[in-house]
Image (cartoon, rainbow, N blue to C red; front, side, top):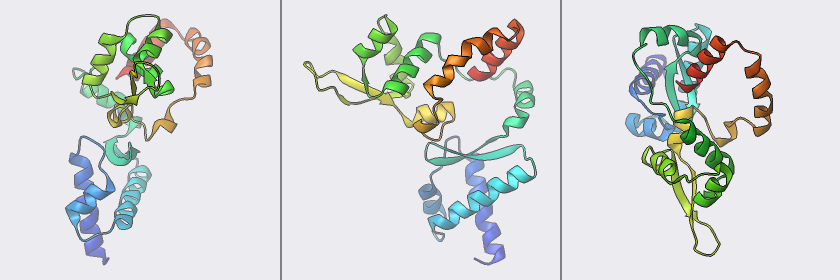
Length: 198
C-alpha cells in the first residue's frame, strides 16, 4: 500500500476500535474495509499499539477474547476514575464471584458440583450469571440424569479483560494472597479491593 492509502486504512481501523464497546475481530474489520487482507490489518493494529505505547497515549490497544479493543491506558486509571467518580460498573456479589471462579477453573462443571464445593444451593446465583451472559450450558454430564454442565463465555473474558482462559491467574498464586492482604493497612486494602472490582 502506498503511504496515503496506508494512513487512510490506519485511520479506519483506529476509528472502528475507538467506537466499539466490545473487542473487534480482524475479520470484522476486513469485512468493513473490503480491500485489505487480514495480515495487513493485523500489521496496522500492531503499529497503532506501538505508537500508543511509545508516546504514552491515554489510550492503549489490547487483545481480548480473540479480538482487539481500544481502552484507556491503565497508567492514567486513577485520573479517569476521578473524572467518572459517579460512574460505576455493576459489581458482582461475593457469592457470584465465588461461583464464577469455581466454574472458570473447573469447567465444564455441573451445578451439583458447584454446590458441593460452595456448600450451599447455587441455583439463583448461576441463573443470574447465565442472564448476565458470563456462563452458559456447554453440554451434559455423562452420568445418570445427564445434568447440564457449564462453562464461561466470551463475555466472561471481556468482563475481566482476559485474552483467553490461559490468562486466568494460577491457583497457586492465591496462596500468598492472605499474607499480602494481612500486611496492608485497612485503608489500603479497601482501596485496592474497590479498584479490582471496578
